[in-house]
Amino acid sequence: MALNADNVRVGLNGNIYMAPKGTTAPTDLDTAWDTAWQDLGYMSEDGVNLEYSTDVEDINAWQSLSPVRRVLTSVDMTMGFTAIELKTRTITAYFPGATMTDVAGSVHKLSIPSAPGPQEFAFGLEWVDGSIKNRLIIPRGEITDRGAITIGRSDAVGLEMTVSAYATSAPELATWLSNDPAWAAAA
Image: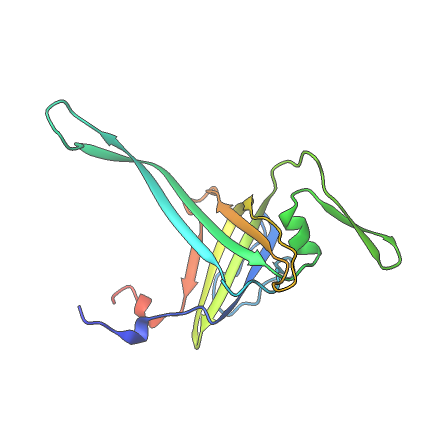
């Protein structure tokens, strides 16, 4: 197989979207995101971190020193990012169950619950590299990890979050769309 530098991709620019669970996502690369999909705004320069992992259970036999079979026991997919645009959608995403209200003129109040319940959403990630466009849709996900909020002089205040993808009624955790010619099924 020949090396081809034209197949090396970078995420030059992109957006992360969040919508109520069950919101219809675009099924192609040209359809605009519906207004229910809220853009989370600026992210830190680190971009987005996608992780996919599987766990297997070894089945061992008395007659063999190596496993005779491996059974897939779990699949995990996460998407991590740090939002640096502090607005109602990102702040209430970071604090599950939180609500924002206007209390007096230009004063806004974030009420953070002491015992939030689970909150599932749909998530979308879109990024481009020149004419190559990608969309990753997580129809059912939840922010399950949060990093510390650091407030300092030299860096933007960031809301570090990790989304865990959950299976839907379909067998997929997520759908990844791309117009990358190197992805052609016959390639």
